[in-house]
Amino acid sequence: QVQLVESGGGLVQPGGSLRLSCAASGSIFRNNAMAWYRQAPGKQRMLVAVITSGGRTNYVASVKGRFTISRDDAKNTIFLQMNSLKPEDTTVYYCNAGVATGTYSITYSAGDSWGQGTQVTVSS
Image 1: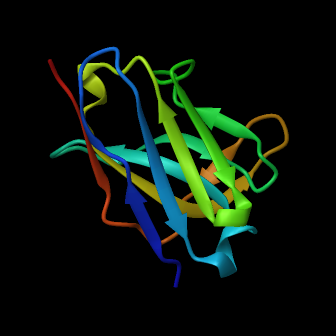
Image 2 (image 1 turned 135 degrees about the vertical axis):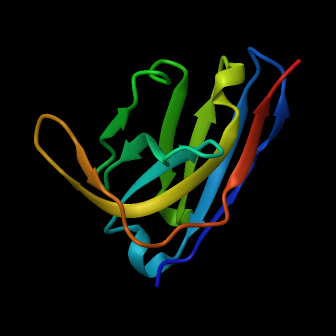
C-alpha cells in the first residue's frame, strides 16, 4: 500500500505563497503519476494539479499560472508551489498516486491511498 504524507500547509495572507510537500513510498513513486487534490467541507474532492512520471503537468483552470507542481524522484517527494494565493484557495490539500494517460491531454485516475491532508488558510 502506498504511504503518502503531506506537509507545508499553514496560514498566509492573500497574495502570499506556500509550498506543499508530499512524501511517498519509494516502491511506487517512480512509476506513478502524482497529483494534488483539495476538498472543502461538504464538497467533493477536486483535482488541482497532475504530474506524470515523465514530468508532464496539468492544472485546473482556477490555479493555472499561480500553482506549480513538481517532483523530486531522488527524494520520493512531490511539491506544490502556490503563489498569489486567494481566500478561495483555503481548504485541505491531499496528494495521490495514480495513473495518467493521454498523449495531448492528461487524464488522471486516482489511486486508492490518501494522506492525512494539510490545511491551507488564506486570510488577512
